[in-house]
Length: 313
Image (cartoon, rainbow, N blue to C red):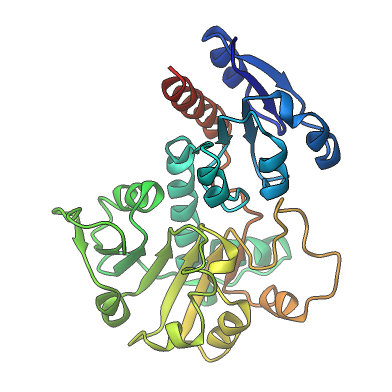
């Protein structure tokens, strides 16, 4: 019997094409509700998700025939991977598909802040021509600290080639990756030397709220913070305090602590800390889009299809 897969989020058509060409049967139901999933999940051997639905114990236990779950993206925090493992369900993701997109977006945030591009753009469109007040900072000679040296962290480091910077990279679970461009470093070295810190780590119990007041105070000098990983890694209240006291000189965030699981709007309720954050002109915010480009949408599909096909052979 062929594997039957239910796809419960929007995906690029190439994913379905490649899976069906390899003998899988795909049911594409991007509008399906959680209640509807629970009614039919027991008839499928495969499940493909993005971020809309939390794949928890209830769904995993109901999906008695599930053999694998494919995450159309990198982060796995919306899947109870531990319980899936207990049930013998293979969990796959596709960080290779959007690592270039994330790295390029991080570069964009960095230069947008260093050169005050968004500030100057808003001013000029408002009729303000302030040349002296919008001088930028050159990246040459700065020390960039990368925390997390997986797919996106290492790709971000490659993008920095040619900018005459010094790169320090820390990864708790990797070693031996240093080269002529990147120095494998400890967190203490990053605290001591970094001018810019870029976060490329998954959301886990270890990393949740990692960048808090105590973490920030360990830096010897004021620094620029970039986060294109997960919002809950950074404590927003402590970030606002650090911006106020200029311990953090600027920040570029593609992700925010207050995001819902499906990354929908956070601005429906009153959140004083978030409102404060948006008032700083040295804060650059984007709506969790670093990993999403027209190219990565297709590359994610190809990467995930290849892994599913290889696993089930």
